Amino acid sequence: MQPSSIAPSTATAKHGLAAGPASQPARADWTIDQGWEAYSPEEHATWRTLFERQTRLLPGRACDEFVQGMRDLPMGPDEIPDFRRLSDSLMQRTGWQVVAVPGLVPDEVFFEHLANRRFPAGHFIRKPHQLDYIEEPDVFHDVFGHVPMLMNPTMADFIQAYGVGGLRAQQLGVLDKLARVYWYTVEFGLVQQKDGLRIYGAGIASSASESVFALDDASPNRLRFDLARVMRTNYRIDDFQESYFVIDSLDALLELAQIDFHPLYARVQGQPDIAPGTLLAGDTVISHGTGRYPHDKRQGIAHEL
Image (cartoon, rainbow, N blue to C red; front, side):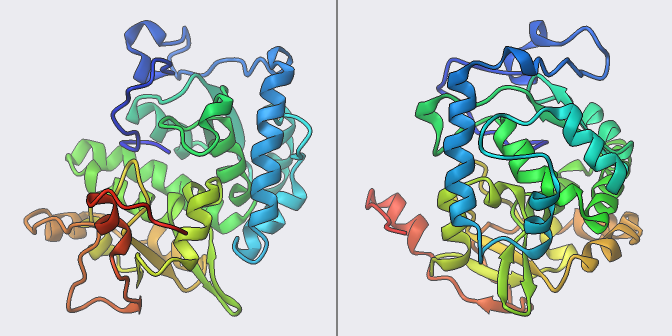
């Protein structure tokens, strides 16, 4: 999850950019050694708990490409994966590698890594009391959520193109528009398969509660993906999404990667932002959400999934 994806924190532990200037590693690209040998038995146990919970939950929910990526990677329940072994598998399949970073990194560093087929993954893992929610992306989110999809050539090409586009968007001052595309695809995207809607976004795939909410709950809107519309749509950083955008297949991402975004930036720049749960007259609605979840939350009412 990067950039602009972390909520204001009341927690004491911070990592990477969120921890302040003193946390910057010696290397200019913010990479560090993963330090796999230093993980404690407790940290491996936390990985096991998260891994087993999600692998029980995702069959019939995750897209076929995610499932296949999981099968083909050296990733299992017993231990936090070694980034070196993950990179060996990725390099053979799509030319990507996983590099360890302390946490969030500056936007330009993040884009530079993606543009060169390096996925920056946080090396730390959440504490046992953070199993259901962590503000910063940890090794479980970054590796379990993102890396299986990097085994797919289409997603691998799209994320590289996003990195190149991010460097351009930063120069043009329209990074917020492009960040929304990443959020509603790579992080919280749904895809229409023959057997129904499926998850491909890492923010959903790595979250037990959102894996259920995104597909089963009546509250959120599920809308056909429209690039200009997504560029204008705000998102929820620290809660379930009020709208999810659905692509017809992963090939739609490659089509996005070939679009010249510059005229689109000019077109949407002067238009108002759209609130996360708002429906527009031109939307192709797959399911019209009730909006019950945000309503209940404002009223202090528990929402059962």
